[in-house]
Length: 500
Image (cartoon, rainbow, N blue to C red):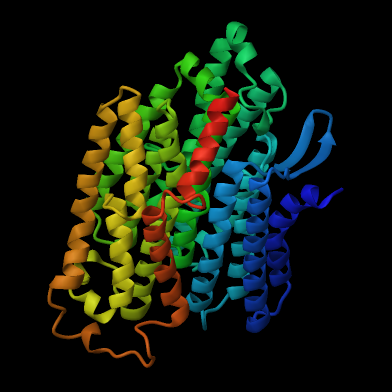
């Protein structure tokens, strides 16, 4: 086999191998574990970068392994795979740095970092899956890999949250399995690289195609946290901050949203989905979830829960954009995969810094916190304003494309939903920003503490949110550049509509 055939598998294994080795290390082997984590993260990022450069020059990267007749394990690089793999590898590196600093001096680090690496392996495998069967294998592998991270603290709340998480995700996985098997029986193996493969079945199997679309959509909607299947996500916020950041920006919820994009664009194809008239329920559920999540966020005093309901809302931008036929709205949906990840991971990093440095977890306790943690709250402000949709931060680009795409498709009601969501985002984010920067801190307590270091927090906790906040700005400010996430999203959409 050639290098181009092996490299997709090597990218996946670049996190799996360090993870397996970590499980066999002694608990006190901190230095070795740190080297393995950082080396794996850097290697994955470098490999994805090399593949990106080769892809732009027309190189083909594809790994295939025949398991049995009509059942093939396939990893394949296309533009959409590169977008998600790039997001996963870049954010894994900064989250690794953050997690090393966050868990310094903690127990059970071997277990955490082992499953942490396995979790990213599953996310990368989802990104690079070349067919529906391979996607499902990694999709369920992700459930098993993230459960130990959710229950890592071992408290009763963590165990209960983990039980709830498994109930939702295994249930969703079972439904998705039914859809995958049904579609494979109906149409044969589904290869993501072949465009719309199901069009020939429209005349004789329209009902079955509709039914299987909805079955698979329900299975994916669990991880994508679409109402009413979102209940696991706010409860899972009992997990440590690095886990919350990973769940919301790279792993579980993003895997669900990515799966919906694959379903609409690569399994069914946008034209067939329109002919079957199966996109309107996705649009309605997405729009309702956007508003519902924002309204619920307003009433959460716990900072991480407020951010969790914000994720419920923001992830459905992707589902809503995918449900609106048209190149502009599709571009907005796909680029929001990256933009939401950058902004949301920034917010969760900052929430973790606040909790670790001051012991504060409630929104109502954050008066004057910007004076104590100016860099942290500066990064938080960038992420929050981006979520609201203010330029030049990345969130504005996503909302602009979704709005223009909705108008282009003759669906102005979607613009009203997006404007309403932005207003609600402002209602639950601006009071935090105002309290942090303009209200007086408490007379006693954290205000009088002085860290025994040069900066407001350890550099491993401070560096990641500053970097992701910077990326949130540059992704919006330089959206027109050829290397931006928006440009790659355009390439993806052009391929999608060219193959239809």
